[in-house]
Image 1 (cartoon, rainbow, N blue to C red):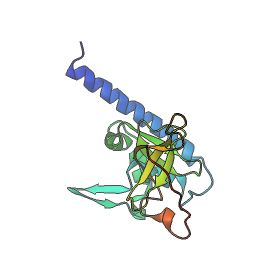
Image 2 (cartoon, rainbow, N blue to C red):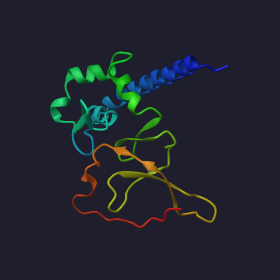
Image 3 (tube, rainbow, N blue to C red):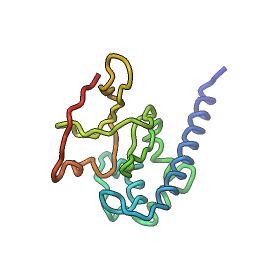
Image 4 (cartoon, rainbow, N blue to C red):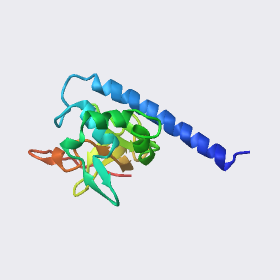
Length: 171
């Protein structure tokens, strides 16, 4: 018989597993020597991705600033079972961290999988995850999965300069 207490233990264990997994991703990304595609380091992009590039202040929030990326903040983010990364994982529980073929770090729903594609839709405010349909009468179309956080493209950076768009059909 499952009790409320056992559900809390399972949820905490899931949170602990998520924290452990994301720490591993952090360690892998910080080993990359090249710069992040939109500037800065992979460690900085990971730091900002986990936090959705937002700093919560009292009952409001603000966009993270370069001054927020300090050794103390990084240490707090990745150490401690409750504080740091665990605190931020609560807000992103059930989401999946990904790295695109082009090297961009992002976050999407748990249903995100290899082969999904990131699209910036005309007039859209967020990047979207679309899944190619590979068989049946809707083959060649795309299924909408959900929106995503992709570090470096949240404020239209990817659309600056020359940009060649393409039409896609959503099923």
